[in-house]
Length: 131
Image (cartoon, rainbow, N blue to C red; front, side, top):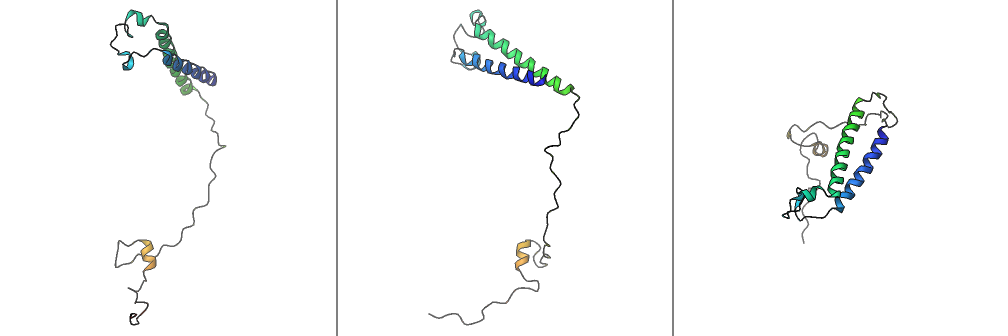
């Protein structure tokens, strides 16, 4: 029943868009044009496209409310588990190094590079190259 109403809703929506696009533009948004034959006049209200728009819009809103009520009152409590994720193994995490006590704000990457005994000695104690 709900699928049928959804198809009818789509057809009404397409007709509503078509009727709205077929209407003559009055120059102002929402029918607020300055002409005396605008949307609120007797001639404008009697126009076929205006009446069709009002009827289709009313049907659209009423059908939306009806489908919401049908969906809320349906007692289908079955749960579709076809797309349920299977539990995966917990991620393997490496042992993080102990934080450097000299700098409490150092990141794990900096602590991994810095030696645990203190600052490293220069790798090359030789005399600088002369040119």
